[in-house]
Amino acid sequence: SPSPPPSPPPSPPKPPPPPWPPDARECYARSDFSDYRGTRSNTAWGYTCKGWPEGAAAHGWAVSQYPGADLRGNLCRRPFGARCAWCYTKETHKRDWDCCEVGQPNLACEHSNPPLSPSPPEPPSPPPSAPAAPPPPPSPW
Image 1: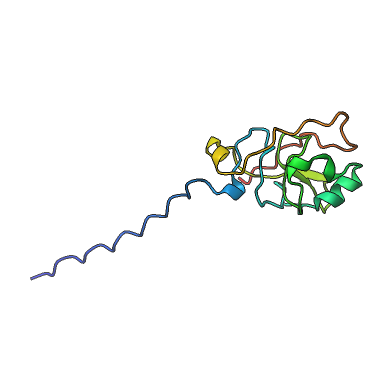
Image 2: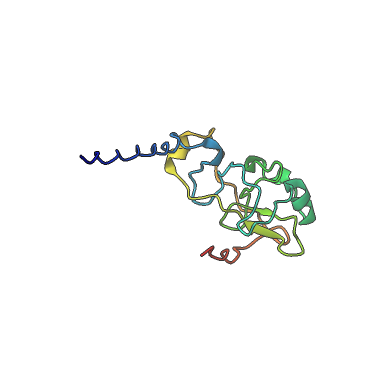
């Protein structure tokens, strides 16, 4: 007599759910990106971010002017200007600054980060070469 058909292989395990609460390092709630305190240091176009003190000095301002903006290292931030988290780039011969891809704001993040100072005020007069909104990066498709 014929043998019974083999049993189907077991189903692969389900992927784990995303962490909850959201990862505080990449979590922000404000639609103006002013509370983004993540670890991104590359721009949406793939350029490497320049350190804030160096980039600011090259454009006539100092990080001390924005004490609540967490302008340390070469991390993407939004101290003023463009309506995105951004940084000055090391590839200035290609693009002096660029927006960073940091995802969408999440209101659940309001409680996962330390208390924030109010949104940063716009400077009375923009520093030289203050970034304006760049064109969006090309679609990967």
